[in-house]
Amino acid sequence: MAFPPTQSLVIRDAVYDRLSVLTINGAPLKSAVKAPITTLQPDQLPALGVFINSELDVPLGEKPTSIPDFMTTTEIGISWAAMEGDQSVLDGALDQFAIQSKRILLADPSFLSLFEFVEEIKRWLIFPKEGEGYIVETRMVMRFIYQTEYPPIAPYDLTMIDIKTTAPAGTAVIEVQIAETPSGLPSQDNPIAD
Image (tube, rainbow, N blue to C red; front, side, top):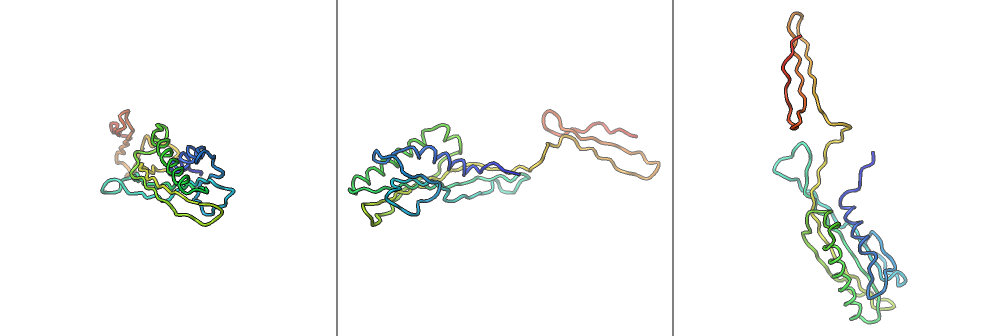
């Protein structure tokens, strides 16, 4: 049985789709991956990486219920890496890319509908790596909160329970049917004696 993707994966893919079309300092991205940027080759820069950093499920309520229900926190990591001869030009370009990314994501109603709220956004620089030019990577983590529940896997809803019991010979057998009413609450038919 195949299950649909988790909401964390849906959010990650939505971030990737919206940011992979952006430019850094007027240059289109040469590579975009759904993973952290691990190696930096000059012919692959500027580069974008979008990935699930972590996911945490915390049960809702004080006691477990019949259907497991959680508040899920997902951290989505976003990395941008670029190379430039002038450090000040690149720092400003990556800053603009980060600002533009937040505006694109947080002003898009279709994106905002994927979760309940953004709890935190954190951004930092990974300082220069030696190479043919000045290479810098900016990382941002966005923490998204949404509710998750795991209903039982059942092919159909239970609508009626028919209980029959056996009794010694000569004893009246009572049959009781419990059916769901339009209100969703169970109702008990009048007992029928055989």
